[in-house]
Image 1 (cartoon, one colour):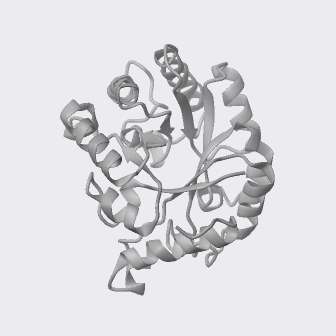
Image 2: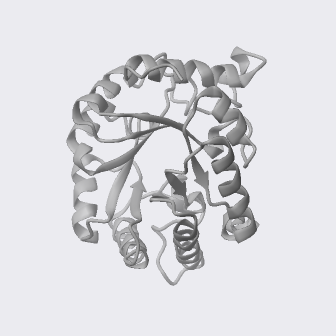
Image 3: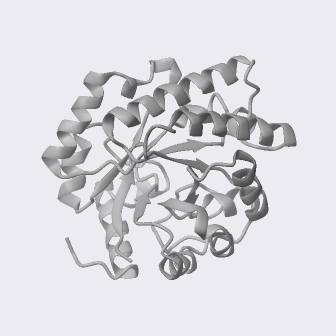
Length: 277
């Protein structure tokens, strides 16, 4: 299995199009874009901004393996279609998929987090989310786009959601910390159970119930064991760094947070037997 190392835009110490120059110098190959917030009119909905990313991506050799509709954490898919949040979620999905089509981005991530705004806690939340995911799959029907849900459902509920939506286009964006962080689930075992549905993976680590707070392999979420499952199952091509290098406690480790990015890249190269860039 061949792996590529990328990063999520919202976790990089310097987001935006110029981030790709620094990312390229560090040996990264891809960038998962953040579509932006509803309150900011979804910056990546603007073709001029899309073109700025495309231009910089081509110039610096950075691919765009996916785009995250992170606004869905604030205006969640778990809300009913007729609520204000539900209507904003529909607009987010519609505009986000249109942007991904124009930019030729193969995976659109649809997250479900942030307490009562976006996460899935009740059966009503579950089925509302299924309805939104079906809507997204229908919108992408004339393209090759894969829809990747990201949440912290257990393995059985994850499989149930995929069955309920009923589309081969729906996959999972797996995260190497969130399941343990939110529910104490075993990260390696959960990935083992749903690996066949996984399309991409956010790689991060942490300790003491703090998100993205440890360099890879140094936290308490069994990252090294999860990496072995990734290698054994071959469930993804892209490993997308999602540590929050610019936040404490990681930012306390160095005056140059890009050094931390480089350390995590080196760790992934070692674990996944990748040649040095």
